[in-house]
Length: 120
Image 1 (cartoon, one colour):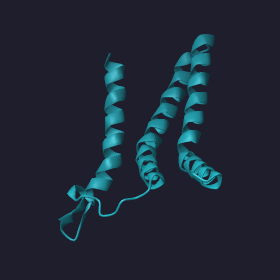
Image 2: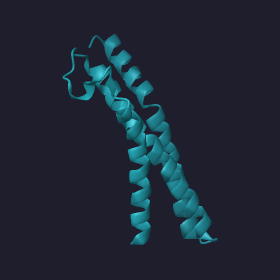
Image 3: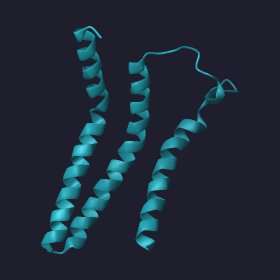
Image 4: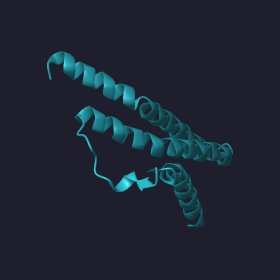
């Protein structure tokens, strides 16, 4: 149980550090712009792009943490074939998830351009 609490503490620390830098400099010219309504309406693609930027800011530390945990799984396997197989699967899926995360904006742009060419 203590191990899970330790992992949660690390996770929350990483997430809070990611957002502290954003919130510390959110005010411009003494005006807190975080509470102001948006001034212009954007397209669906702009909305999706902004959401993806937030997901990437959260996802990159999660991927890094998952890689650390997967490496720790390799270290603690000590030759046990089932634990080694689990560690290999964990690293494989972490790398695949990280690649999808890093390519998500490009994937969204390709989908937008494809829909635009189809006349949508």
